[in-house]
Image (cartoon, rainbow, N blue to C red):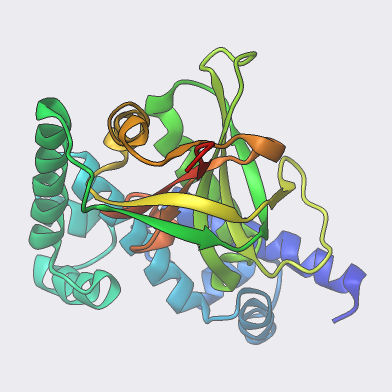
Length: 288
């Protein structure tokens, strides 16, 4: 497609994705969504697949199951009610689809997340021992598309979900190579840091509103693999700095504004996966 034509098509597809996100349980069809895009059903099907890299039914399924996964781990609604709100006729049909999406049953997904969260909180309460849990790794430099988070730490998941929806609307979700949280320590900020939701993605040279390109320098990092909810990430970083770092042969390295990183390893678009690599920039202490 020519660039001007592709831009017009992208705007129409964004309207369709917004319709899916705002009413995931509605009985959408190719015909009804084509009307939202102001296209014939035949033309819409071809354009949608070209822009999004998948069929409209695949995108609809992804949206419904991702929103359902978020409700499973952040709410207390019965699985049957979540299945109904996601547009499935029965909990059994929902469970089959969810198992294919997350590789586990809805009940097990909820249980695993909450169990990991309780274990992580317990470890941090009694004092984490990191000796055999932290690896020293050399991370390559990379460029990411990043959206800045404004607000307290507890509202970061809201910004993450907003960013995921933006990726979906912008037809970039299928191109994501890795998903990261980028943390710059900055005493001038209210919270003492700047946080960005970011992805490494093939986005060509497109210019996006409210999204910036960051160049992340490579180098030496201390890596801790956290199996728990995002609510304990900040505590774990603090424990790495206050517990492990003083007893190691390293010191914190903020040279060239090297940020701390969260790399999400499980179901990246949801930003709620229970497996996250926490990466703290370090350098050898003098005389070591």
